[in-house]
Image (tube, rainbow, N blue to C red; front, side, top):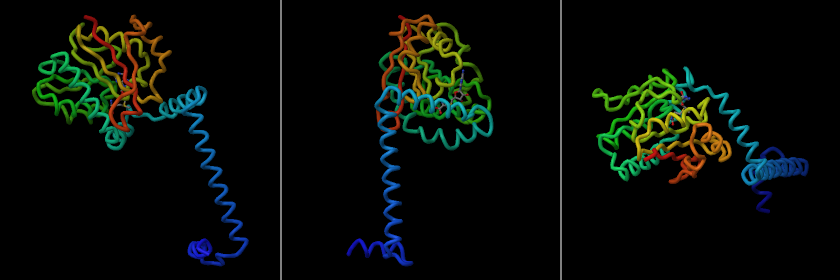
Length: 258
Ligand SMILES: C[S@@+](CC[C@H](N)C(=O)[O-])C[C@H]1O[C@@H](n2cnc3c(N)ncnc32)[C@H](O)[C@@H]1O
């Protein structure tokens, strides 16, 4: 009885007829099948090796189609996408401060954000680290037009157009290199890791974060490390910690050689 009453509400025109009931039943069955197929595909994608490989390939192809280095892509990214990652930048800023403090470089040190985009992470770091020099580097001048609003007049916080694979810093001159969501765009990741290794001070550290789906696999990263002249074990891969947004990210750590 209750069921008939509910049907009469949602289908006022001839709601209770057998034909309508059959149609509703088919529709319900179709929806259930669709949901089951979606759940099955999600399980295959998340928990099987071929599924994960396929998901990664699709994600990388989709990402390659999203052009964010020129306008209007840079504005869209700055306005709509970067704000979504606010929680990640909070978490990364906490990691950066913890590392600098542990290494006694929280004052007067130099932090470099590779592929800083519109500068949201640099802004967060600058709010929390008032005595640290922070430089954002990015290939894209249009992204840096957005980032420029966070630069400071005294030059403590600045932005440079540049390639992560050819850094404008002396050997052993940087205390901490950080990067979020940029690594999967680096055309020659080995070149970038070799540069990071060159510019890091002894006792410095690099923290590179990227989406798990787009980040390099452990095998790929081992190849990149070797090509960069490092040992595969020098680049440590772990899941980023702290909250739901961070859980989608992988963090790579590289220590400056003492
Ligand atoms: C998806 S955006 C991420 C921006 C920012 N880090 C964030 O978390 O919102 C990727 C950025 O990496 C930059 N990029 C890509 N390859 C680069 C390279 N080789 N050197 C410097 N920047 C690079 C792009 O210009 C782009 O601004």
